[in-house]
Amino acid sequence: MANKITDGIAVLNHSAIRIENEKTIYFDPFGIKESKHDADVIFITHEHYDHFSPEDIALVRKGSTKIVIPVKMKEKLHTLDFMAEAIQLVTPEKNYLIDGLKVSTVPAYNKTKPFHPKSSDYVGYIVTMQDITYYVSGDTDATQESMQVHCDVALIPIGGTYTMNPRSASELINFMRPKAVVPTHYGGIVGKKSDADEFMSYLSKDIECECLLQL
Image (cartoon, rainbow, N blue to C red; front, side, top):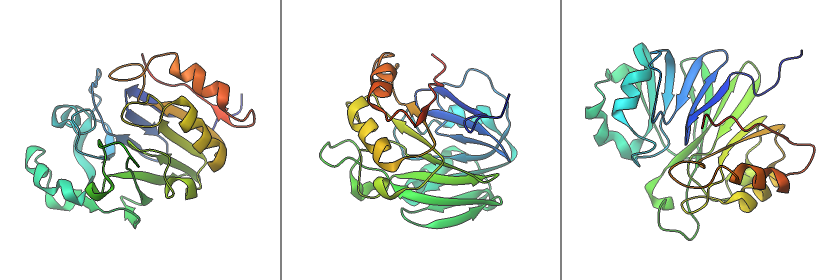
């Protein structure tokens, strides 16, 4: 069977994402049940407890792990005990080369809700591995910046309350037109398991949807 573009992706819990491709990378590890200590790079989108968890970061990191974190979270680095050369501070709308990977940052924010203000400089990440471009949006609404993202696979929140709900998330994806989408941020702390079915019902039929949340 031919490889799927979403191969190697796991949504471990809520918005905790592991992608194994050219390297093994994690986004916002939280509620980790199996400590593999296999992360080449850990990406943090913002400071909320369900996205920045020092205890869970410790479960996936190894001696050579790099961590990527918004510059406004710099004061929290003392809780992680990473060497300076293993830390990459980032700001929105910038391009980086991190551990050999091309990485771009996309602003992640709410347009009217108070939970993720644009002024906080929270980010989503566009990461390219083996010619596949992954967009992990972090906690965001459908914004002007996210609508300009070009990617092969989009991983976006659908659970509502703090982020997009199934309908608004599907509208963003139908506009972006990635090859595949993986919903996140539902079925646990916020949102229902059935949100994934609702989200898929609104999607254009030519966009592959993989529900990979390990509920």
